[in-house]
Image (cartoon, rainbow, N blue to C red; front, side, top):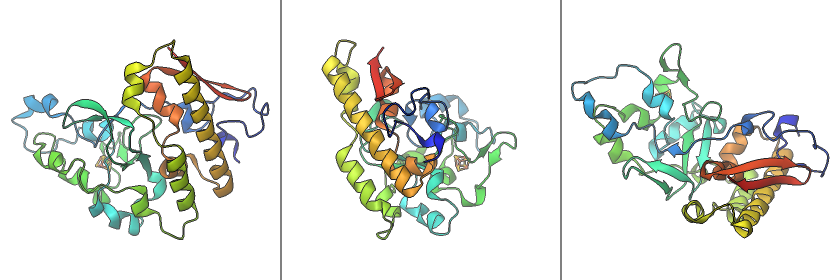
Length: 263
Ligand code: SF4
C-alpha cells in the first residue's frame, strides 16, 4: 500500500509516529456539503437586474454539481472518470437549498469532487476564471442561473446517479462496495448531532469502534485493488470519522486505531 494511503495501522504499532492527516486528502476535514452547486436563492435577491452569467465563479467555488441520469454519456465517453467524483452516501448531512436546512440526504448522490477538503469544484480554474470542462460540463451546471434559480431547483434531487448506475457488473469492486454499504451504512447523523455530548461515553465508543472497522475495511480494499484516495472516495464515500468531525468530534490516531472525542 502506498504510504499516503495508510489511515489505520494494518499492524498495530507500525505507524506509531505517523499523523492521520500527514499525507493525502485525508488530512482535510470537509465542511458540511451544500447540495448541488447552488447559491441559495435568498442570497441572490439583490440580483434582479442580472440576466446573464458574469463568470464570477461563485457557484463553482461553492461546490461541484451532482450528476443526473442525463450525465451518463459523460462517464461513457470518459469526459468524467470515477476519480473525478465523490460519493455522498444516503444519510450524510448536507445543506438542502430547497428547505434551507441541514438534513440527512435521502438518496445517494455523486458529485464532482472538491479541491483539498473544500467543495470547490476541481474543474474550476480560478486564474482563468472558467470551467476547464465547459463543453462537457454536467447538466446541473448548464441549467444553473444564479439570478433565476427556478430551473436548478426543479432539478434538485431528481434523476440522480448513484454508484450502482456506474459500476459495471464485472467490476470486482462492486461486491465490496455493496458489502461496505451493508456493514457501514451512515448512522443516524441527525440524532447523533442532537443528542451527543462529552458525557455520551457509550455512544462515542460505539462510533469509534465502527469508524475503525470502516477504516480497516477500506484499507483492505485499497490494498487489494490499489485504489487512489480519489477512487476510494468514489467507491466508498468518505470515512465515517470524516462525517463526524463537522458535528464536533475530534480524531486522534494511536497505535491501535483512531480515538474519537467530543469537544
Ligand atoms: S463542472 Fe465546470 S461549470 Fe460545473 S461547477 Fe465545475 S467548474 Fe463550474
